[in-house]
Amino acid sequence: MALSLPAHPDPLATRLHTSGLLHELTYGLGGPFHYLLPERFDTNLAAFRSALAGARVEGRVYYAKKANKAGVFIDRCATAGAGVDVASLGEVREALGRGVRGEDLVVTGPAKADALLRVAAQQGALVAVDALDELNRVLTLGGPRPPRVLLRVHPPAQPNSRFGLSPVDLDEAMHDCAEAGDHVRMEGFSFHLSGYDTQQRTDLAGDLVELCLKARVLGLQADRISIGGGFAVDYVPADAWKTFLERHQPGDYHAGKTFTAADFYPYHSPVAGADALAAVLAASPYGAGPALSERLREAGVMLLLEPGRALLDEAGASVFTVQGVKDRDGYGIVTVDGTSLSLSEQWFNSEYLPDPQLLSARPLPADHASYRACVAGASCLDSDLLTWRKIAFPAQPAIGDLLVYPNTAGYQMDSNESSFHELPLPPKVVIDHPDDTGRPRWRLDR
Ligand SMILES: *Cc1c(COP(=O)(O)O)cnc(C)c1O
Image (cartoon, rainbow, N blue to C red; front, side):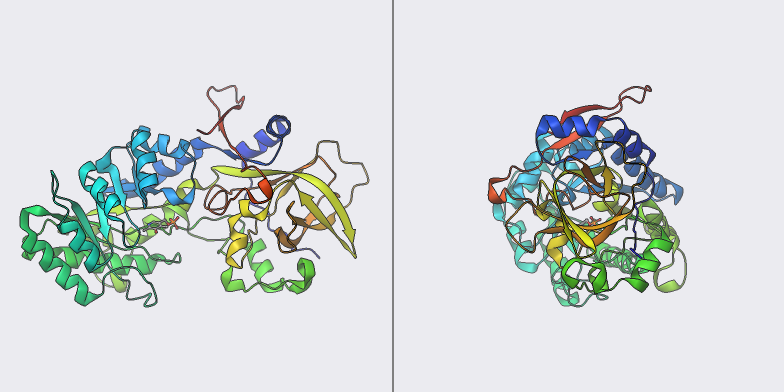
C-alpha cells in the first residue's frame, strides 16, 4: 500500500491545471518553471491583519522576504502598505526599488554589515540588533537621523539558538541605548523562534512586554515588540499525515532511503497561518493571567510580526516535465527536466512530502492503473531526487507529462537553485485573474 499525501484541494489551482495553460507554458519556456498566484498572498496578508483587528491589537505585518525571491510579492506589500523583513543589502534594494518605504522595512539577520546598517539608518528602517558589538556599530554610525532599533532577545526556551542577546547582554544593551540618548531610537524588543509552537510565542511575547516596561523606566521609547515568523502552513489533511507518520518505512523510498521523521516539516498543522496568530494573542503568557492581547493593550505595546511561509500558503507551485521513465523491481524512476535544487527541502536531509500531481498531455487509457515511482532530477548525481518516496501516480507517467509540486512558494522554489550542469534557473510565471471570467493570464516575474 503506497502512502499518499495529497495537498488540500485548491479550486484555483485545479482550474489552472485543467485550462491547458501549463502545457502551453512548458512548450513556450522550454523547461521547468514555477507559477505564482499573488492573489493568494493578498488573501493571506488580509487574514493576518484581521486576526490583529479581531484581537483588538495594534500591529504590523512584515513579509519575510527570504521565503521567496519573486518580485511580485514585494509589489503586493508595497500596494497593501505592508512591511518587509530583509536581511541583506540586495533585499533592501529590491524592496525599496519596488516601492516599499524605508520606514516599512525591518532588518534582521546576524552580524549585519556596516553598509547594511548605514543604509537602514538612512532609510529609517527598523534594525533588529542581534549582539552587543553590532549595537556598538549602530551607535557609532553617525548620520542624519538616529537609527531605529529593536533588541533581539535570545529565546530561553531554545537555549541552542545562536540568535539574540543573553539577559546580561540585554541589560547592558538597554543601558547603552539609554546613554546614547537622542542618538538612537530604541523602539522595543524582538525574537524569532524556530518551530511552530504558539504557546512558546505567547510566553516570550509576554516577557517582552515586561521588558518594554522596564526599558521605559530608563527613558527608552520601547513601545513595540516583534514576534518574528514561524506561523505554520497546513499542507495535507490530518488523517493522511497521521497514517504516513505511523506507517512509512524504508521500503516506501527509492534505495531504501531513511528519513528521520523529526526532520520533516510538520506538513499537517491543526492551527496554521493567521489562526496561529489569533491563538498566540488569545493565550495567556505561561498560561496564567490576562491574554497576551490584553497585556499588549494595557502596556501600549504594538505587535510586529514577520511571517514568510504563511503569507505564501497556496501562492504558487512548481512544474516539471517528464523526460523519461525507467521500470525497476516493482516501481519506476521518473526523471524530470529539472533538479532537486528547485525543491529546497531535499537539501535539509528531508523531503518535500505533498504529492506531486500528474498532468497528462494525453487522456489516460481506460485501463490505467496506479503506478508507484520516485522522481529524479536530470543531473548526473545519484542523490539528485526530487522525491525519494515512491509516489502512487494514477497511471504510469509518460514523456511529456507534467508533474506539478503543489504549494511550493514558501521556501521550496529558489533558496537553493543553481544553474548546475548549465541548466537554466526555472523562471517564475505570475498568474493573474484580472476579471471575473476566470480566464488566467500570465507574465514573467521581473
Ligand atoms: C526566517 C525568519 C522569519 C520568517 O519565518 P517563517 O517561518 O517563514 O514565518 C521571520 N523573522 C526572522 C528573523 C527570520 O529569520
